[in-house]
Image (cartoon, rainbow, N blue to C red; front, top):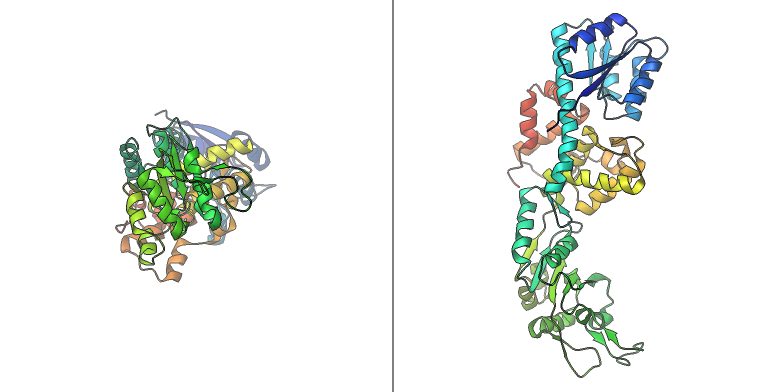
Length: 453
């Protein structure tokens, strides 16, 4: 993969300090931009958008914290390192709070400065590579308008491929917002009847008294208001596929009629004496637990067995968090084009916030949140400030404590590392230093799966 050249800007009113930084960077493959004026330095940063900025704290006219505020506002993905000859704990805390990635004190040994900058350059290259890699992976891990590289989703994709040529009835289950209609559409497109109609009925939106007419049609005069013959969904989709979304909402009386249609492959319009043969594939979907509805006598067991000859269960987004980067890239690209914006991606700290969110609304909620964030974003990267208020304030750990949930030790460790990483602005070197571990251990903890998953 192409190695990206990292641009570093150094802003310091002391030319000797700039020469020192130039010497420290000599061994690194970077483009160095320097400026002795804070005003001109800020304009340089806004114009060239370097990945790393080395910023002197005490400068005439505009101090480093003011310059920092402007940089974070305009380019939140830029890594800003404040350098000062007058260290104080208060100014260090204030700098980190306002978005600085690190705070170092002059005079700094050449080797130490070289190592610090080297680590930042490596991380900047990794971030740039990750953006490119996400775009390439997106092509690899797209399947029939669905996206996923997690083992759970790869299993779903494999199951769809295997059953699509053969199924007559199928049941798709999963929580709201997980993409059940996308699975149904994929089954249809990969089936032998893909060239024919794909008819959709949202069962939760149909008035109970009109169910039979909606599915099977009626003849003129069959009931009050039936002014003309109507073709039902099954007849309309003859030779193709009928998708019955929210199948758990169908009334019991209608369930028996639907079962008869599935068994006999024939329908009877309301008010008509004759039956008509239909050849359709039927896909049903639900976010309800049909076994519980059967136990409550609210769903027919024989209909369930007829529908679930092939059953595909979609996992919630919280169980497939490794898919978040690809989904984020996909939706950001989609909304950036829709809104006519040049948004390249999302900052590490915003990714951390998304990674900690519980995602009860699943992919539908993720799409909504990123659509809003793209609308709010003013720069090239979505930052925490662009996310809805509920994400900025809600903590996954707080939610677990309030619910009394007991977590495995490894998950407690992982979530604590995420909290520290968020406080460190996404800087893994700084997070590792706070935690007293090396950066490789940080990566290992974050990449480990919850044993309970």
